[in-house]
Image (tube, rainbow, N blue to C red):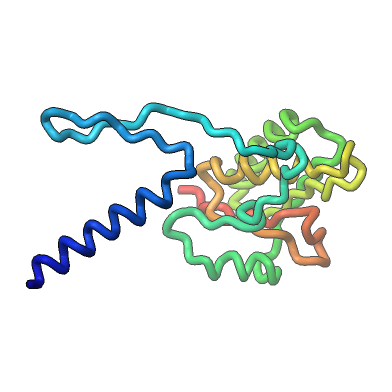
Length: 174
């Protein structure tokens, strides 16, 4: 009798899944004779009303702070509180996004060479940018996520720039 209940549950799960997928743009994969799982064809779905990408640059919650894999999230709280003293500051006001990223790379490399543990990068809040979009903030923080020396970053304390600046915790040089 237990076997019958399991089959009923499986059948109801399959039915529920089929109903949930009925209105989605889902195409079932053709069956494979050898029962292998094949990768689904790449399909790019566009939302019905897609807002401009530039309208939301910097609005992403994930850009607020970052901790590399294996780094304790408490380090982010320490950065936000200002428990790490910023050994150096770098101001990006007036730069293009490409120039800012190149400048940040040089600054981080020089800071690490100078054995700085924490630095402050001032990117601004984008208040004077066309459309009020903080392009530098989003681009710089995206670049910081990819830099090998960055362990964590967070908004600077209010006294040091707040959302217009970022405190960066650097890996110790070897």
